[in-house]
Image 1 (cartoon, rainbow, N blue to C red):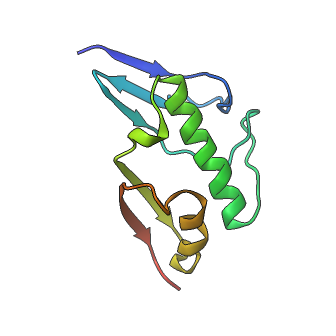
Image 2: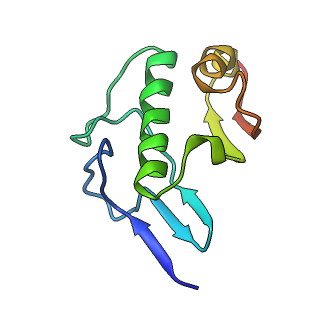
Length: 108
């Protein structure tokens, strides 16, 4: 099966590491972990909601560059260091997403 590696695209961070933003295999798109990173590849510190918004915008940009849409997301895995922040992130994207989530991290 052929693979299409999404390394650049409108709105995607230009980072120096050798990791693709996404890989398309057949009719499926696998998006790499995205962080609160701007188009210049620099980490942008902010509130949990602000960082989640930027990270999700990077996910959506990777999907778009790959020819997909956020409505096609079926699974998202998020790592948390503090599950008390979960509700703030939930309101950024998940209220009506209809996808299955796995939460990793410790509450504390």
